[in-house]
Length: 174
Length: 210
Image 1: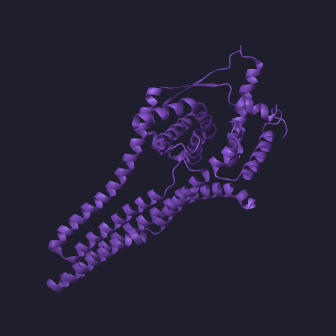
Image 2: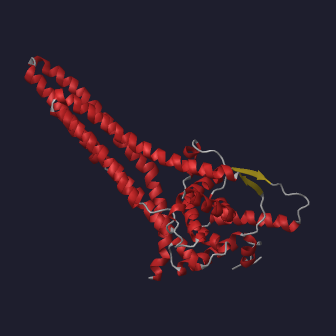
Image 3: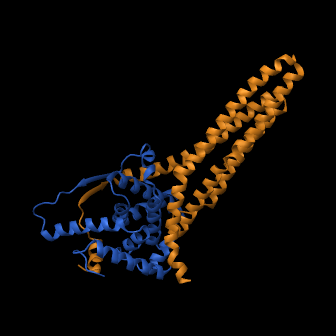
């Protein structure tokens, strides 16, 4: 049974690690915090595997675990947890090379600013924007958040307007 | 750039950081983290229960020679430990899983924090008072024995000694009580407000929908 759980966990991790890290990057800013939140999400994801009966879609399940963990994660407990944990992620800056095209550099800048702007949003709005950017529909978002489609729509519109305001010049008005 | 273009680029966004994770290490660390967490919770519950059982046993043993007040103190130790362990088990059963909806998880966390606040605010009733009953019985019976069995001349000195002892206990209780209230103010109330705001922001439009 444990082998089966391990396989599921490894597959989830392989398929969704980029998503998990995008979530981590929104809710934790420093590398130290990102490592802590990443471990926290993986811990909850591993604990949730035996409860996964296939009634919910895998992506919905993973979003729920990751977002719930990120939103309830407590920075202040980081030091206490750090005593028992060792870092599992190696972060290494990739300096922009002069050979990079100007559009690639602009892209870097845009996403950097986008992350900053998403962090400024109210937390529920940031969840909605994140899921929207990831391509989730309203139906899936309601299942993750536990709110109505109408509410999701209102939140998303409001968040898009706020992002357009914050990213003036980079993003068209909504 | 339009928002739809941003959505298209989001999943293929350029990495400005190389992130490497050792897959072999990952699972073993996640498993170890889970084990550590579970054993920390178990150790905490076990330590509290074990201390109470040891104290109760000591009081029961001394009670064989020293009389009923020590028995009463032993019973009170067991009561406090039993209450704490039962309460933890009940709350653990009520806790919703992290894979519930965000709203469900926040509601559950808020319930946990509210209960913790209630527990610490009422620490006098379930923790300090039972011990106080045992201690008052012990001090009272010691004083009664002294004036009954020994020279009444010892009564004032015994009273003074027991008074100092009682004052130390009251001071200790005052410290425990205020430490708990400080934890409520410093940690739990801000956390509660945080969760209430989160829940409110999840609820505000649902109310409009209805």
